[in-house]
Length: 463
Length: 98
Image 1 (tube, one colour):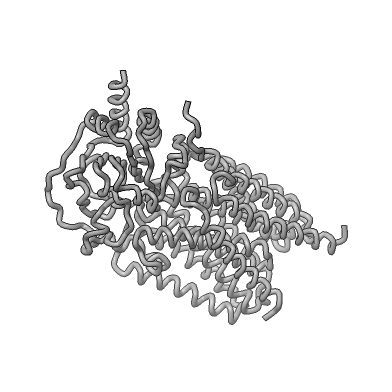
Image 2 (cartoon, rainbow over the protein chains, first blue to last red):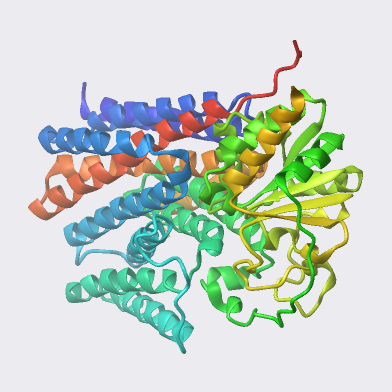
């Protein structure tokens, strides 16, 4: 095969791979065709890699083989992690993607300098700045999610000033390099400063902000890959990077809407800021509580039940018990649905995956809008490990820090039951008026054991 | 501006529009698999790393390229694998009750 034929062949293979990638995401739109989407993506990837190996400039196949084998050896266990660890695995994969992009960008600079045209140097700078900050930022996020690092946000005076200052210096260096690409001594600084910025950016982030942060890092990883596509003149990489960037962007916007944060607030990474202001006056108001026996009685008497899970359910590993409760009630003819708030959990869609793993059928998992429409006809809403996402103050109290945040309207159901360890407030430190309603019953205890106790009552009354 | 570059910008713009339209349609139910799948697709950056390592123009670029291949390949393998595992778990409720 002549080099020209090989080149044409490679370009055609890339074109097919690009089409397969778009189909892959299109098929993901429904659970019925979603797995076909994965196969399309895999086929596209394999075709593109095999095609690339035909590239005439390749002289050394040994390193490629080592890289591919080692990568597969690391990749398999990363694909086998437990479903509860999916958020940290996702953060880690953003870090790996960003690492790849940054290393390729740095090599390209050193191979081409000083002959780097201004536009090329601009996208190359964008590539390594985004890549470098996404790498450390994602590692930090993974560390917080895995609880190797403290989950609580760490804030100090002038934090935003320091962070934006760092970023400004990095951009300043990029501008100098665009005009003088021969000043190679500046290049390591352009890598190092975003590297530090990535760490600083995640320090003020608390666990509950993770869905937004992971989405944002996803978007950055995609954009940096698209920039790499410009540097290498690879249309396939531009397409894959834009798809990833668009996906991360859409999810970031969804998440920030679901937390009632403005989009600029998200873009500048000013997450954990509003939390400090939260703690309101805590009144010792009376609440009603109920035993597992009473709760079981109320649930069996209901004809329509909505379960609202939150991160607390995942922490207590209660999802399998919750599915048993779903089975027991469904068997008795109770219509049981799940109401999932977009930011429940630690990443977009987290609760759905956990419940699907526990064998809850996906057609019973409803998103916020749909479930809110049915709330007034719901007999019992059972809240497990969620708090702020069902706080009616978000609708009614303009002085509340979460005012305006869309919530699941649990207070519109006929009876509200809340499984909770104690009367401590949620992540935002905000009191929840839902607890004090006449129709609310607090079920004090660990989510997993309390649901287990309800199940025991249900099977007892059965005989 | 060179025509290559302009073509690339067109590709970027069109791909971004397609991305928005296609991904907007993905149900929130599948947002976690969406993120792991787009991540796996993003690992196509491996083609750049393969050329870098394979061309071996300098020792630095060959070493960095090889590390980049490892990082991207682990994303592709792990990403597709876990996405498929997740999607396998999503089941509809049985249509007929015994």
